[in-house]
Image (tube, rainbow, N blue to C red; front, top):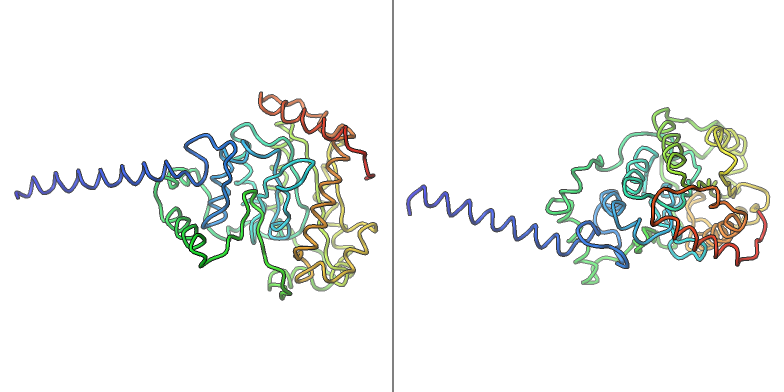
Length: 335
């Protein structure tokens, strides 16, 4: 075989192999990008940041009423199973607000959520550095072939074989397990003692940009201040008060707030069995918090929270009308 013929055959074979791989990846479509994702059940495989970034492009809008924005503090809240509104959990382990903004931008790019819950916790604004990959639009093309995609396939395959556990559900929530854990070094430095929380200005700006983007699209916003075990919370009570004051300084009259540091939740915070490390919740604790969030959203909807939204997209008014109908049929249980 001449060198010229060899080159032609090699190039043709390579192109055919690439085309075959791209076609197969497009057909499998584990991120819901290349065919209608409505009604599909797509858990996170591989790198959670990459997966949630890509799932946010079409899958989240097609199957969920809204999103929960947070860090590992809220990552195991099963908000996809709520009755008031089915939310996708965008919280990621070690996540900060810069990373969460990148995830939300994908959801906002195509229609956007019907509502958004934002976790108010100092970890989200303690840093703006990426804790994993830097999320960029090139991840979209990586869904047709990349090392991240290969890692996702490996993860899915091992789960099928029973060699790894499926830790994410189809609504983005993660199963941490139910054991007692030691608070990680970053949270120890942040949560122990009485000093005020340090706020990274870049991360704080991202938080404000997230809120501004949601309001610009008339997305109803609810802030959720998560619980912290009482023995950790009490020495930091004033620090939490100041931090929440900074985050909610620009709160609008239409925004809603659910505060698990309020006195009505003191008994929950005092029960150490609700927490795995004083900050993250065990399964039962997360289930209780999710139930309270669910109940509170029903109350907010019944009070007309979604009625303030003048949504420009065709799909969203139908979704909102269904949520309003549900809220109107639900007896409010108080603020």
